[in-house]
Length: 246
Image (cartoon, rainbow, N blue to C red; front, top):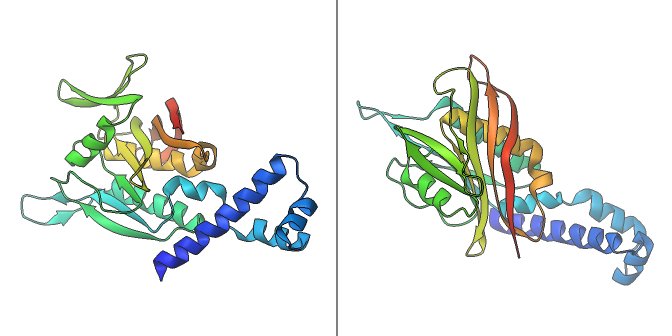
């Protein structure tokens, strides 16, 4: 039932987007209503009742949201507080876009993501899957120098590292979005877990600007400000967004 509810929401979004596209191309809403055989009032209902266009940034839904599982020496399972905060922020964003979500754990040796639309919240040191996904990006790369991970703008060669590991200050992270085999994978990968939270913070406010129907992949390096309690106070893109279009 959740699957079909998500499909119905996507069809409503597509109908709204088609109406708005026709209007941008010069048709009045009265003309659109006449062509569709419905009233102008019904057009207004469709526009106000459908999810926003940027819903498609995450695919059709439902969306699985994963964070890394951190196994302790005692055999217990734990999750980083910043990872949990990032997941919660993403889940709120998905709900705002009428997307159902579920949770999954990313094992320390995970190399693949689940089937279907997915958000992978994972710093590169927590699981190989974060490194594998980022390696496929055309604009940005991940490197390790002197034992520390850094993000690199391939065009300029500029390196972005995380000076705030373990404290307050500034952290960085990667946002990637690409379509693969009819589904969408969104990757949020901080150099540390706080960086992942910063990327989620930025995505929450920028998703409408990032979404374009013709864009198939997006990537950016995001810098975020962190206070002494490891909370995100601000975030911004420092490289990108870089896009690939149809």
